[in-house]
Length: 169
Image (cartoon, rainbow, N blue to C red; front, side, top):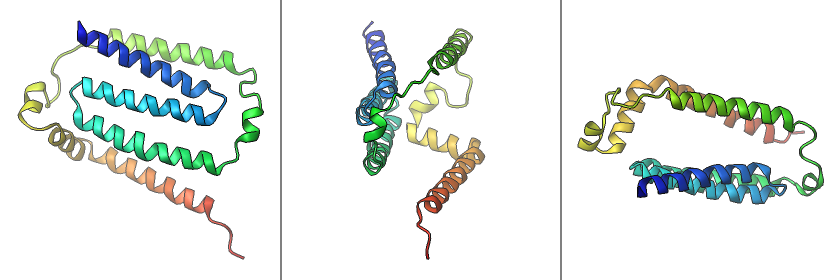
């Protein structure tokens, strides 16, 4: 019973904070709501006995990504954008898209079958650490997608450097 209470608390706060993050007029308030969202996601990972992923969530997202977001917000002059009207008649299409995504999620949740289907069942993960299980799966079975993601990030970094670099005269 207590597990359901914690799960519903974390899931309700995650949904509420994500809605608060995208609907605030002030960008800084949205970022602070996103920080609360990241900490609650880490709490949900702790609830699911995924301590390593929870620590990575706090270090990478709540730490590094949020600092990056705050620096970008402080570098941009957003005072004029706060005064502008943000939602100009496009909310009905967003509502339809959100309802469609919600239906897909609900249908996928109804068709999920539980059970041990992969190599890493609960007994195998308990015999080794979670870090070993994640690393072994990531660098053996999912090595190619991992490398593709690293190339995409490299291209994004190079693009950011090219866009940020001032032209030399």
